[in-house]
Amino acid sequence: MAETGKRDDPFVAFRFEIRFDDKPQGGFSECNGINLEVEVQEYLEGGMNTHVLKFPGRTKQTPIVLKRGIVDRTLWDWYWDMTQGKVKYRTGSIVVFDPSGQDVMLQWDFYRAFPFKWSGPDLNAMQNTVALETLELAHHGLARVK
Image (cartoon, rainbow, N blue to C red; front, side, top):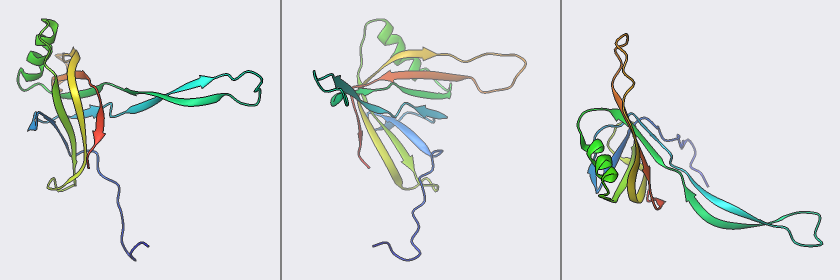
């Protein structure tokens, strides 16, 4: 039974951190692709015209997309090594903090990640926006640990 006056607010999505190999990788302005989907296999059973049987199949992971202002070469170098045939899988975490930034509220770990797409900034001399880089990661699984 819920306590009187107790309120559970949703977690905020603006205070987060991306870690690779248990080390913070710098600040990211966006993180997308925290998705898992179980494929549904349909089976048309002969003589049954009222419905289609459905069974769970494999789990698919969507790419994790990270965006940040360019501050160093770290992400570029990881991606460049991939283009040269030097595959380096990394384990990582997506950590969401409370509004104060002190306590971890949510955490997902992803496994055997590697970059497969890097996008550089849109440059425009008529604007004063931050130069952003985007890195897309394929991975072999996502688990919620907190």
